[in-house]
Image 1: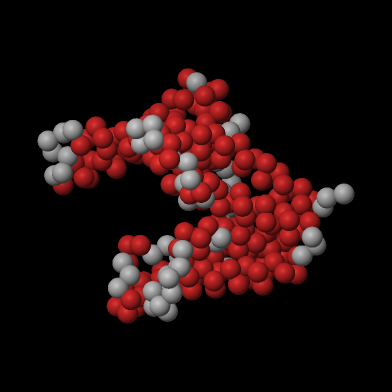
Image 2: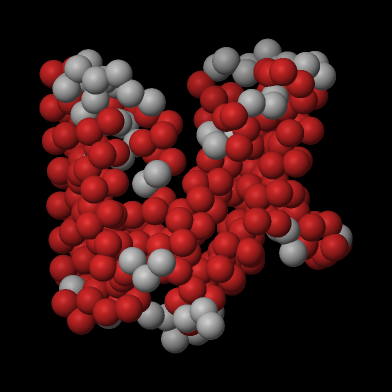
Length: 266
């Protein structure tokens, strides 16, 4: 009989699968139209791994599957060592690869990071370590320290390897920063819902999944305008994208709830 942990992980995995299926299907249709119907430019290994912004969703599904298999094999004692090893591997093969003279696949280093963070969250829920040992101010210090450490790492890597500061995805400081945010979220509780928390819970997934479609449409429309390349056009683009995304998703949830549920894999 599966344990409560196994069942909870499997439930999360099964909830993610229809979301990924629907979202990937919609973006396959979108990318096919963008490629002029050339399916060879759409269907590849990257489609089911680093498929645009959906890479995180695909990586999370893989991480849940791996965690479920590890729990099924009663390998709980190996979880933290495995998580630490993957974090170290990702740092070496991603941010620090050029400094070390390594030629690596950075996409793979990013994909596998979902598993260690999932393990850290799982172990924290088991032991209550975060809520017992990290105060609100401790969490704030972790966030500030993580920001400073990331900045120092970015400058160091840029100076010694020439790697663009804008292309850094994960650094050692990112781990402390993320841990601080996680701890702060656990320590701070809200006595009741607010408009922001309600909207975040209801619409954040849909915004994450489908905002590139709105961005593509707005960017194309603005590119047809004479002022598109002017500073005002560049500043106006993200504002329009955010406003339209929220309005469309809100309208779908109210006027077409079945479509809204389908888009979210429900």
